[in-house]
Amino acid sequence: MKLLSGCPILEELEAKDLIITTRGVENLSIDLCHKSKTTLPSLVLTNKTLTVLKLKRVTLNEEVPFVDLPSLKVLHLKSVSYTYSDYILKLLSVCPILEELEAKDVILTALCKVIRTAREVLNLSNLVRANISKGSIEFDWLYNVSHLRIRETSPCYLHGMFHNLTHLELILDFCELASFKWNWLMEQFQYFPKLQTLIIHDDDDIVNSSDDDEDWEDPTIVPECLLSHLRTCSLINYSRINCEFQFAKYIMQNSRVLRTMTIQSAKSLECNTKHQMFMELSLCPKVSATCQLLFI
Image 1 (tube, rainbow, N blue to C red):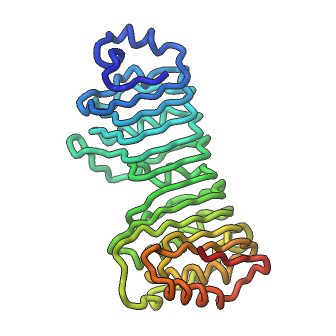
Image 2: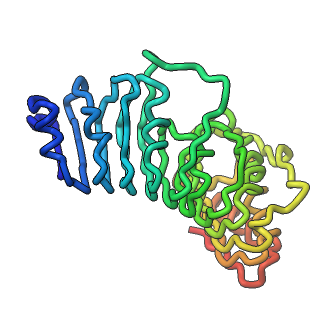
Image 3: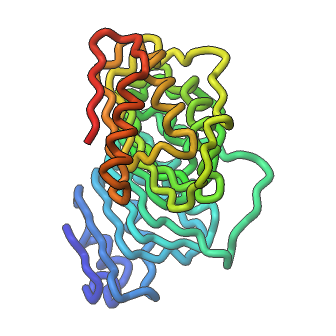
């Protein structure tokens, strides 16, 4: 069932009518485009039959309501705003069999924000896939996933292992901390012991004009995923600066089962610069005899 803005279900029907309309529904999509003042009826969040729920351009202005979604397996949140900091945490905590989570532009407004001194703990033990972009979703909440795509704009430090994670796609936009991100990322590898596929999009526009390879520090211990699991690594928007070269070099030198190292150069680079980067990377030693370097 798909409900769009202007639909009387959301603006005119009484609560009892809404219950009847959505009773037994398993797949529900709500898009409130051009209706920024229309809030999501809390009854939608107490549907025991829903397995798929997609909310787009929805405002959650109520204080955290009673929520019960025992059958929900897929949850997509896009351009969702809310005013109580506990709302998203409460919503996810009552989805015991949630398998797929997508959150893009999920924004907490400052109106009723609560400052917390302790880190929230969330148990999403069935979650296997997550796609997070500009969402109020903690990295640590996703510990059980096997396939993760996430945008990070600042360093976050993990507190537990991601034992099931095999596919990780990172979009990094650290701005002034651009030169720091590669060392930070290498530190996080210890939490991904079974990582097989790594894709990194470098979205930073602010870069250092000088050679900053001296800022790079090799890990004291080679991460387990490099020793026995990583098979594919892709660096997108590669420009060599901000320690990118040292990161790529370390991956090839220490990934024993690496099959493919793909470098997609930044479009703004000149052909001569791209050729020089390719030659430089080609000279790097590879511990894996089957590793193929692709430069595109």
